[in-house]
Amino acid sequence: MGKAKVRLFARLSELAGARETEVEVGEGLTAGDVYALLCRRWPAMSGLAGSLMYAVNAEYVPPGHPVRAGDEVALVPPVSGGAHAV
Amino acid sequence: MLFELTAAPLDPARLVEHVRRDEAGAIALFYGVVRNNSMGRRVLYLEYDAYAELATKVMRQIAEEIRERYPVTDIAIQHRTGRLEIGETSLLVAVSSPHRREAFQACHALVDRFKEVVPVWKKEVWEGGEEWIEGEAVT
Image: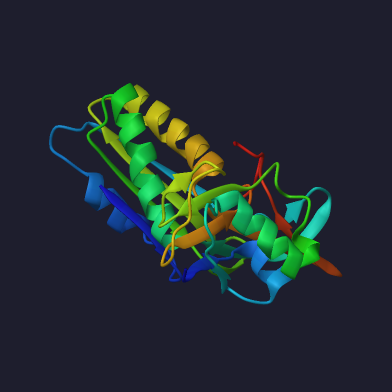
């Protein structure tokens, strides 16, 4: 079926010790499923499902968005740009 | 319009010149600056991470949103990545408009939207610890 690339940022990349990784793409795989797969690999990532956003090929998508071989998936924690959260 | 993420020091003069127009009587420029304290802790420095490809797209989307709400002439946004020392500039938002009120309002609204949706993250490093700061979830 092929693989999808997964980009990791901020706390997630520190937990994984990597900026990117890969997952096997199976039938019906969704962006949310990718997060579940990574939680099995890195259990410390668990518990974020309610706050994560997802991007596929650099577009925000809902968790149920399909992931295909060759896609780039990103797990996007709540953002904190600017100088300070107020 | 100009949307950039860069590891180099930000350049306010370049942003202002980018949005300057003969028909725009006002330019509002916002600086986000690294503060030396957060939640009672003395901050040593910050580190910013970003999903650059998505961030520049989302900046363009929020700029288009703002242009629908205010009579904006042009917009330029820069955010810095990597390690930033206290007093350095992390975010610049420049907005030109025919009149000052709309320039201020549009610039304010853009900074607020930036902090909600642009995929940029900040790590605070203080004496004895560090933490990735996560904003409010907007799912």
